[in-house]
Length: 250
Ligand code: PGA
Image (cartoon, rainbow, N blue to C red; front, top):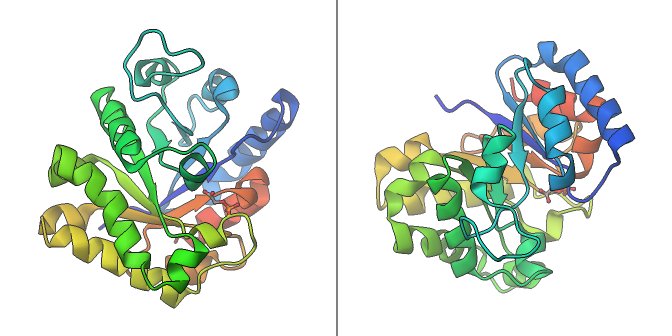
């Protein structure tokens, strides 16, 4: 059985004051979340604060990005070991906003994936197609290419200690969600693609859906057999909405 994981990607939102309120709301309601693992990924500047606020709770901490390098002269970057200092368990790599706005290549994302694992962190590898790629019928090819960049470089077994988030770029922050069928189709493709290399890695891999998942549509999406959680942007900024998604996971 794959335990569902609901992770909140706060992106570059919030202030010290607002995140204190948000975390306090999450701590109040987390008891009612039964089976799902819940994680939050605050902006790097607030990792220390959130880390101390959630100590002793079941909420896990994640970061939104890390450097592909372990240390050195990389102004502005943050290493996996630094994330460990704040008890991060997860780190998002290859979010579409980093791929498409910051120009991160498949190769760089693969290096970040490896850097995360080398530091003992569990990478959440984001994959997903642009609207024009869906319209061109190459959704599966795009997802396969983004995953293969990791497995070609480091082998399929590295996926054992990772999570994949399927996030159709056209659904992110747009209020436009993939239908449960559209999402399930791609999730099944991803699992099958990995199964063709290693069945047991594919069976154990948690694949999250991301893209305008909210309290209203979460239950239907999470009921799909290959959807093992959600990576939540906008709806993770409100404690009640995020907790409702956690409860919808079962
Ligand atoms: P959204 O973002 O839930 O606001 O669409 C999801 C994501 O980018 O991870």
